[in-house]
Image (tube, rainbow, N blue to C red; front, side):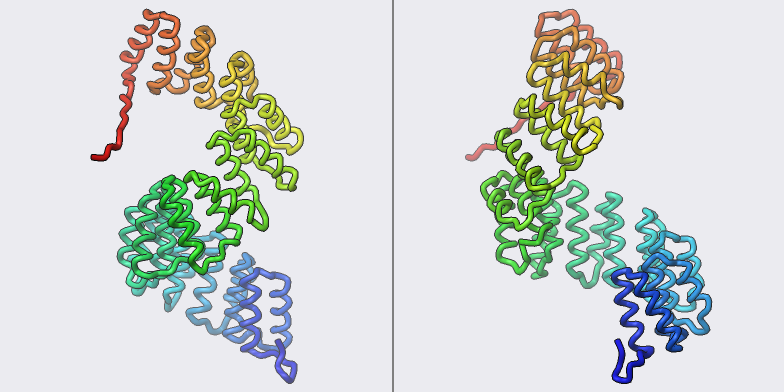
Length: 452
């Protein structure tokens, strides 16, 4: 930090303070502030501005404001640092007040206000500021696109994307991840192919978004193409988030051989990757292997969370592994101090229902500390049909019709239960009740792909 004579100057301090801002090293930054005071350069415009930026980004907004108010001379960077500081702590009222008082503004100050409004979910306010901007850069567009994506307005996101004069990888990534997060994976893939056709090289964040899109589509050929693309690129597939996404994509697209190879080659397997593999094994009918992998995960010291227990309980349910299911249900509560959620209870109810232990499933439902959701009641109702248990089926159906009076599936399930024991008059009564309540059964449809 020091020059040959050992005295830091007005050029040295800003670079050191900026480093502290990037890492939010408050103690070190404060010590450097003290050093600047002792050296007599703390009042310098550039040093003072860097300190305002530092305190603002480290959420010490009162310190930043005091320094700002004590300045004899301010430039656009000083004003912008104060705006960014208020945005960082979520005080948009003060941020807007400082912004409105600025004698001059640059694109960074405009972008800071837009970013703050987007984070608060005020897309109208953000768009108004965006439209007022005398000059926009790619950050301006990316912030708005990301904001629209987070609120599900992909039409507006795409409209702005098409107006970006010079697109960088970040703005492409924002649109691709937006489509993926909003359940439009096919659109995400189309945008990636458009990007690739323009010779824009993707980074790992774009590829992770694309893998997530492929996972949702479930297209094996597309997954193989993406996998091959990543392998040929300069992207390091050993980065935890990249290889985890690759594993998940291959699992969900049915390429368990490739997923297993990637999983076993991981330098460190995390909880997300374990859960992906466990789900994949279960989907492909390997319930016992899935349970074995879960136990291996525990032995390796990976601590399961609520989601992991939902995964393993679902595995036990689909494989009919009652004892294992009860073991994990108890283990979750007593070994990991995780209170079972309605989803955990629903998995256990489904498990007991599948193996015909209907009374036990019903008692578990009644013992829940929270109100069971319709999915848990529905699983038990379906089991009542399979086991011709009319008495319990009527009780469950009555509760479901209270929860979902306009869900045609519940009426149909009850009607089917009556039909299995030839109680046709009751079938007619159920249908009459549907008509009275204006409930209509949605007709099913099927399709067959044929080749000429």
